[in-house]
Length: 263
Image (cartoon, rainbow, N blue to C red; front, side):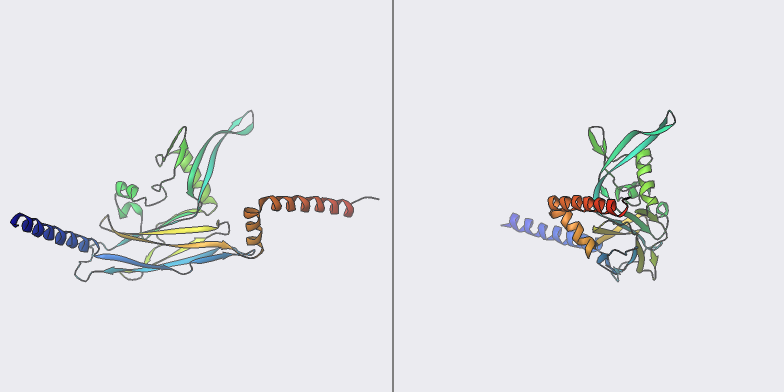
């Protein structure tokens, strides 16, 4: 009986230690919300900006970090397969020389922080936690393999640059504002070309270069009205949608021939 009692006592001690470790690890937690969880796209939609706001709930016994908190907000839109092509001038003509396919990458991607990333954490931590556009995983088809590549890869750089020019990829190291040491907010700009779908928001809290805690939330972008009707018809009734489109094209051509016919 004594060995069993000893094992039981040892188990209780280990369980107590584990609870203490978990309690210490959860000394801070994030409470966040977004101003609108459902964005509707109408024919006159020209873009919108959502507001993410939240607070850091701290254990009263836990000391405040000496350098304060840092926050990294990553917004990623619906995944999609995309191709980046490299052009080359041959005989005075620009032709596609090479290409790289990106697999299931975010159609919209944004990283917002309260200060430059290199001041928030070391490069290995930024890469491990995928903080910033240069550190987020963008899977590519490289020959027969699927992998991410180094941040200096020309195809990767060109892909991010082209998406950035359309406002669909962005990074702002002063977008997060701490209203108090524990209250924060940031804006999430959505351009007119933003794709419909579900958007994931990952929020990571760091202090002294280390990850403290993290949480996430989401919102969705949907089409309404006539655009939604057309999109649903094209997706769920593709045959009839194609037939109606062909008939409309024939009708338009016939009407144009009558209007502009020369007698």
